[in-house]
Image (cartoon, rainbow, N blue to C red; front, top):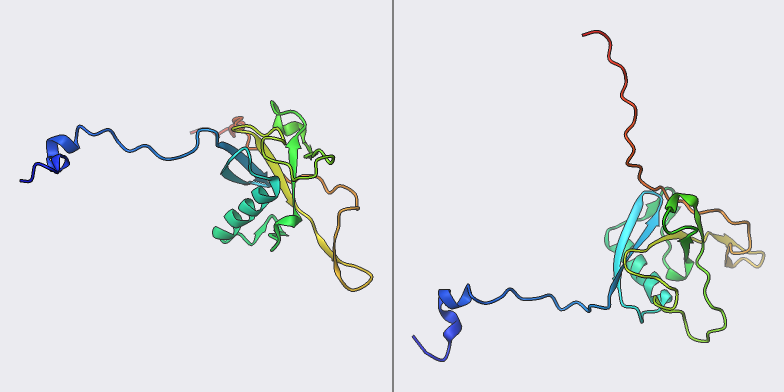
Length: 165
């Protein structure tokens, strides 16, 4: 046996610590929610929200999701809009559009939007409508359609009474 390769011995191999994954410790995991669908994405704080929308769309398409509760998954990530909880401690209180600082010339980042590890974010798709000139327009000016997010309930349902056995 060649002495230049000391790692070939089984006793040496089992003494080696397991390899660590090379994930960035600054990465945050965000839960993106629509209806009963939740997509977890690990994001870097410096990534833009536009890039985040593209990653979300890629994740949906990689799982061959074509629609969520009747809403077709768009082909363009610009058709995705994010919402944040009214109260992060109680997601059932509802959602509001994620407000971004419009004074910034560059796109807002995950950190700039205040997103932290474990935060839940709602998403929805803009509906494309045909404009008067025959082109497609995004329905951004209409009334707010709301956020289609169903939060799972862990309450026990009342048991049905069984008749006499």
